[in-house]
Image (cartoon, rainbow, N blue to C red; front, side):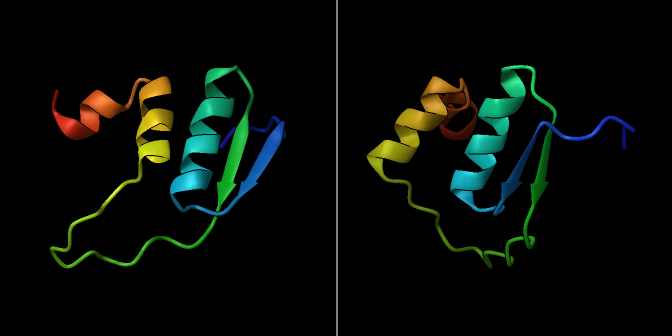
Length: 68
């Protein structure tokens, strides 16, 4: 961990918090993300709404998740 303080603290490690942290980090900000780790999915499918897919695509992450 760097000695430089965070520029932004994102509280919540769910989908929205993770997207926010990635977006802020890509602007050059030092981000600290805090939240509980997600529970294991136990083989369940994760569904994303269109808004989430658009946000992932805007950050260049959609292809890594969908494979196309």
